[in-house]
Length: 117
Image: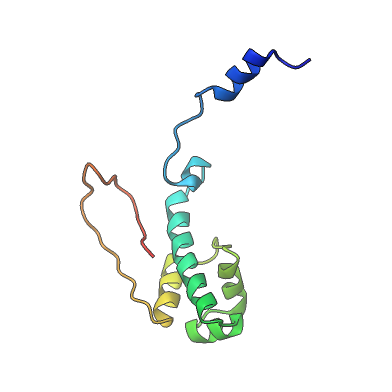
């Protein structure tokens, strides 16, 4: 039997969900969520450039020095076996400037890693 209407509404409006962060990977419990987020941001930018330039995976491999299978992994966001350094080097090979800033965390900015791509 279905619960009474008031009981169903109560179930639908409960606010007992955990407070999320701005990092869905962290919310999902990934141990390396911060690193995966950074990799995803770099891969997103790399994939954006590849699409804008209509490059094939073979062309990207030639330009970046990556193997075609690695390029395929990046295109599909399978980033477990690709280092941050490799993604940054690939972006540089595609004419991008990659900058890393280290600064003290303020009250407004918690400690961590942020990528703006």
